[in-house]
Amino acid sequence: MKKFLTIILLFVSSITIFYIVLFYCGYLPIISNNVGFDAKVFELKRIKLKHVDVMVIGSSIAIDNINTDVMLNNFKLSYYNFGVWSMQMADDYNLLNQYVDKYQPKYVIIPSTMQDFLEERNNTIPKNSNISENYLGYYYIKNFSNLLEIFKRRREIKTDQLDNNRYDCLKFDVGGGTSLNLDDKILAEKKKKDIHVSLTKFPNQNTNEEYKNLENIAGFLKKKGIKLIFIQSPYQTKYVVDAKIKNNVMAHFKKCSDIIKNNGGAYINYNINYPGLPDNFYADALHMTGTGSVAFTKQMAKDLTTIIK
Image (cartoon, rainbow, N blue to C red; front, side):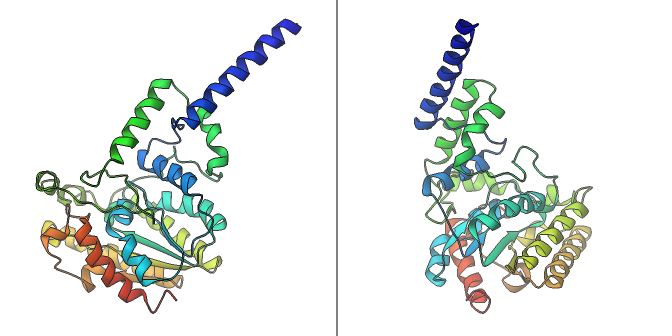
C-alpha cells in the first residue's frame, strides 16, 4: 500500500511539475473557445492590473474603434479596455459581475453595434468565478484535452500578436486596445464582407434576451453607483440599403437608448451625431482602421468631457 501511494504521489508530482514548466515557458492553459478572451486574460495577468477608473468593455468594436492614446490624453484617470472579439451583451454582463468588484471602475463604456445582440452567452467563458492569474492552473485540468491543443493555441495567439496588419490583431497596447494598420490587400478583402447579410438576420431569436442582458447591465451598474456610457458605434450606412433593415436598426437605437436612460446612464449614437465618416476610416463596415479610431475617439472624448470628470 505504501509503495502504491508513493507511486501515486510521484505521478501527481510529475504532472504538477510538468504544468509548472509549461506555465513558465508561456504555454498557458485553454480557458475558453474564444482566443481573444484568453489572450486578454493572459495580458491582464502580465500587467497585474489592480484598479481602473474608466473601464471599456464589449466586442471587437471596443478594442478596434476606441483609441487608447486619445483616451489617455483626454482623461487623467486610470483606463483599460477589456474588449474581446465576439462578445455579446450576455458576455459583458457575465464579465462585469466579475470585474467590477475587482477593479472598482467609476465609469463603464460599452461601444456597440447590432451584432452584439445576436448570440447567446458563450458558456465556455467562466461565470461567477475569479479568472485572475491565481486560478489559471485550474484550467490546465478543467480544459485539458491534449498538449497539441495548448501548443496550437499559443501559436495562434503569438501569430495574432505579431503586428497590426491583421484583422484578428491581438497586439494589445498599454490600454488593452488594438490599432488596425491594414494594408490595401487586406482592406480590400475585408470590405467585400459587409454587414448586410448579418443584418438581414437582425433581430433574431436571441435579440430580446440580449436586450434583457443590457437592462441587467444597466441596473447592476446603477446599483453599484457606476456611470454607464453606451456608445452606438458608427457603421458605414451605405451597407444598410433595405427599408426593413433601416427600420429594425432605428428600433434598436430606440430600445438601447430607453434602457440606458431609464437606468441613469448616458447614451450617445454616433450614426446620428457623427455620420458620413470617410471610407478610409473603416477596415470593414463596422470596424475602424487606426486612422478612423483616432478621429472617432477624439470626437467621443470631446463629448464625454461633461460626463467623465
